[in-house]
Length: 240
Image (cartoon, rainbow, N blue to C red; front, side):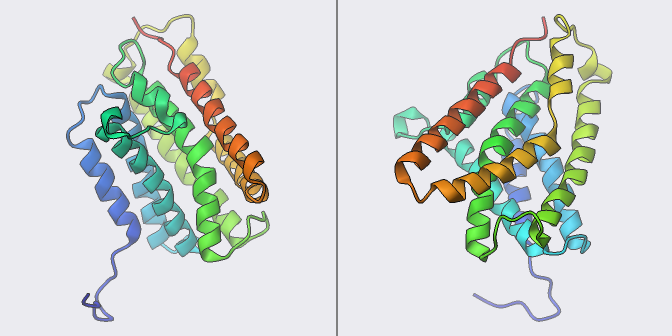
């Protein structure tokens, strides 16, 4: 493989993640629930990409690599859904509600977006953190450059999430009939920062438990089921 000259920029691996999300979005109709999540995730990834290139992190390589490993877990769910059960593919338990309900009527766009975030952050992020820290030989302690950068990403995520929420709940998309304030409850109870805090603690737990295979297996099964349960609660019908 030809190495680029020193004055030729090296492609950032996050760019490949962005391109894959753009390819996923291309054939999906706007009303598809997976498309709603993909739109939010793509906006977040573009924002994180800009932050890593602006030298706003102490360890941008860690954030970049975490983003790639994290994205691959979403792509694995996409690929499993595309392959279908006949090919022996299994959608991860945490992702089942979103893929099962993606074409359901009466579910608001923002519900789909948050349900995807629930699966990806509350389950996949912990797994990606462990893999990234193992690969780079860093600990999951809280007083580290990696953890400080991880927390710094929250500001970017909350800003982008707020922009998507506003677009999904105003104008044409916001002209919806809400049943008993259910959608308002969904919005009030979701916090990306809280979910990411929990993911870091879950990653710490995974690292401890993986030396005990039976306990580790049971923990991961329970995690997937609990995240799926929350996902189904997020996707209750709120629109007529």
